[in-house]
Length: 133
Image 1 (tube, rainbow, N blue to C red):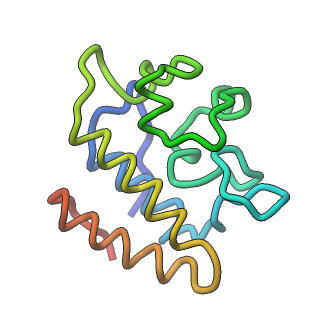
Image 2 (image 1 turned 60 degrees about the vertical axis):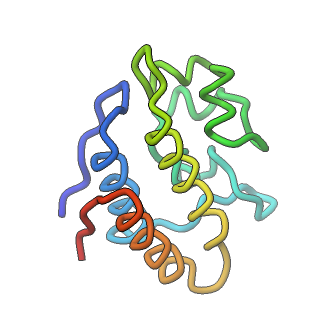
């Protein structure tokens, strides 16, 4: 599977899921951790499952560390609504983003890729998305 090309605003759940799947499961990028071993949108490896979706110029200056992605979008930190939504916020899409963030964060540590893949498989079922094994 080739990593999808992201076109903003991101509105397609399958494309977002595929991109995160490729980034961590196929390419085996490490978990998005900062220099203090804390989950980060903006780590040297392009960040967590949400950070890897963000354009670098946004990721580097967005200033929402310690906030959930849904809070960042709802309060429009650094114009995140222009990246993840159209004019209308889609609740199901926001839940998927939050679940991707949570799946990444709880998988950090030993066997990250194995745990994250299992979490992604559960999300695929929950949101009726295809997996690529």
